[in-house]
Image (cartoon, rainbow, N blue to C red; front, side, top):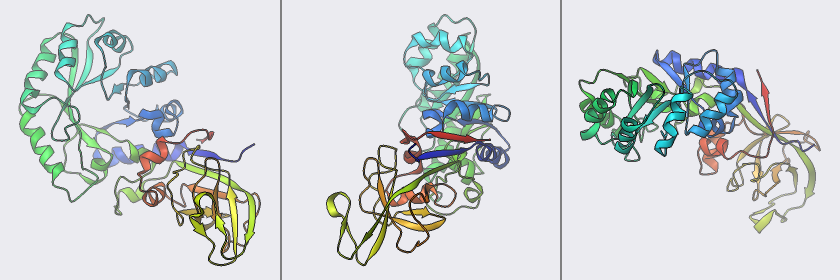
Length: 356
């Protein structure tokens, strides 16, 4: 059996969720959209079911998968609904729903619902992706309350630059949100993972931890709170071939790396078809037989090469950690000019192996 696999530490997932609660003293929706960032949404939701205040997903398809798996906690649809026909299903399954556009507010007003729904009204406070314009926000809130279709409204917005701790944009967005929501009697949700970790001054009755749940920092620089995160995924495989090469030999497609001395090279069962970044260059760190080493040459679809020259104990079958507790996903992402979100979400083909 091919040795490539991703080990998922569910206890670490729970500890990262508890950290979000500890840092904010707020209720927290565990963001498990995109199949829990590649970690398996159902298993992650089940692991968090006894501790989480609720969950957040992108769309109704993801929410219904959780309901079918027996998850009864609140589930927020972060993108809301895409057509009014989804609203009765949202009510039927007791889903919470973001409204980020006036057409959605109007659809809720006109919907025939079996029971009122909970709506999170999203403001565009400056990211300019989705969200109700600040000038329309208070009126949209009043329309939802007056509709008779809504049991509760939560006020929310989303930061564009909270992962940049010295960027004034987040403070500007907070001020925009405060001005446009002044006088509205409702709970507030502003803080995502970087804001949970690095913006304690931002008010939030609800927080939305995402990438931090999976143990990856959203910051480019060290941060004491991010340092407390526990990696949840370990992507691992084994050496399946060992080559002894003299100086001057090219390795892999395109001859992008040429040996500059006699070298031992290991071939690992892992490639971009598994989700390992194709553009990770020579030098990207890996752990081989418990020792730090490096990637050599281009990543292939199913295989990649690593340097065994200074790891004499490494041989056929030696374990290789591509990212995890010893090589952080954020470090690999930096080498590959990517972000940890991409690494996790791009994972495919490799089996997920869970530990409680």
